[in-house]
Image 1 (tube, rainbow, N blue to C red):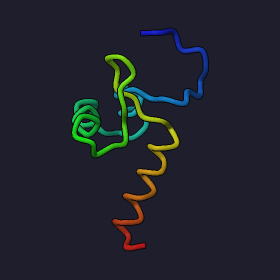
Image 2: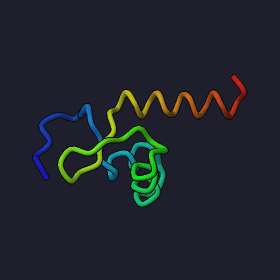
Image 3: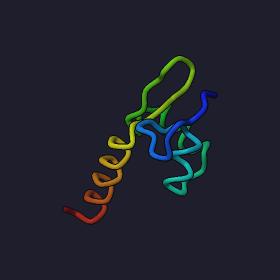
Length: 67
């Protein structure tokens, strides 16, 4: 894995997404693979942009609260 040069990356892998959301890493991977989360591949690695993750969380929250 490449050395991270910032504390605020634009892209997150499954482990970083898991740490941010509190969901299990395997759950995140399954959501990446199934398309439930708007992730994409760079080489062999699945990633999601921070902006897309935040938008997804907002959308899920709005759906759950009926907004």
